[in-house]
Image (cartoon, rainbow, N blue to C red):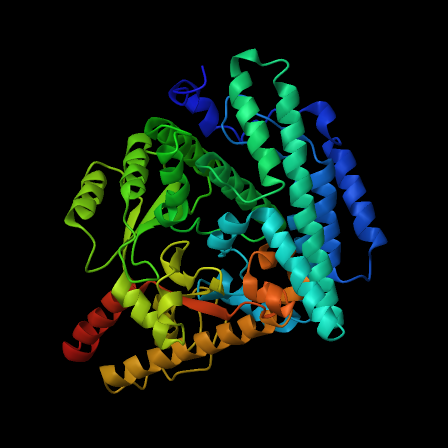
Length: 521
């Protein structure tokens, strides 16, 4: 049966990444693949890291073993063995042990004592989903080639620009080759899976289409979104937002129904399978996308897909999916009541974010109104401008409660007696205000050290994590011929996160009352 098969396969789909069925003869055995990749890396020693990464990416997509699931509407799995992320660990460790050795040692001590963490962050990103769905991989590849040619016709490309365009072209060609490999094995699978032959035929054709053009149907659009997500994760940058589901996919959804490509219930079935992909990854922080909000033209983004997306989320109760709902003064009560009802019913991975507040805040940083209206909530709640910003939102975590403890003990950790900051003269506080001022100085010291570490790492981002696939999906990077982690994006922001604020406030209030007001001994 072609349709209405989700529930009979739900358990299998929700565990699909735990036990993939690799097609033995579809590629190299994992140990052979790793050996080949390591040989390639060794042979390219001394060459620019973006090219090394791109060549390894290409090698994996052309040679890794594939898993085609005849019960699934979307194909995406390749046995990559985390080869690229392991390579990044080597590059990262070198930076830690050389350029960052002294300050990194201090940071490790501070974190071991619960004071603060600070470092590099490549785990909070989102591509330009609009461009990806509008142009497809072939269109993005054409943009890369066109921009390189137009720039080289005007003046000689710099070495960095040459490397950027070459690396980006390699990875986007590799993605197209991967589409065709998946299509070929999906087609071959039809020979032995007559029960799922029709589904495999549609999967095969969608993959072939995506190799030559942008998506035109809901199935193709969702298939592209899944594959891109998996491949950027393989490259090393965690995708922490799948964008505005309703605003991104509505045109495919609506067009399919209007022109009788798929029925409404078939569209919903595809969404169920898509959700199962996100959930099956079991990422502990959740796989988020958002609904609603204000469109760039100022209109409300809510449409019929908004309600379907929310209803299906509630229907399935999948724990690893997080939905951000962007609300504003024009958001309908119907949508809010529906979402709140689902939360009361137990589906509580729903987060509300107020558009007017976020958009105003982004504009204060120099973002235009139109850009700000296309913000995406990254990861937990952090707003970023889709396609224009590289948000490193988890560079540093600071335990504000630790600042109170250090102030009480003169900058010394009481358990280990290690000094983390300068002495604050803890016995000389004549008033709570003086003590509170010393706490703020402790925090200031933590923040300054954290920022120094972040700035130190940012100088070496390209030595740790060049990103030809991610950068190729950002128009500003392509225009400049510069990687996202070399300042190619329009906006580049890092963050210091304060934690333990509630406990800190409680501690300060208790100290003020019992020590400074009541003089309790």
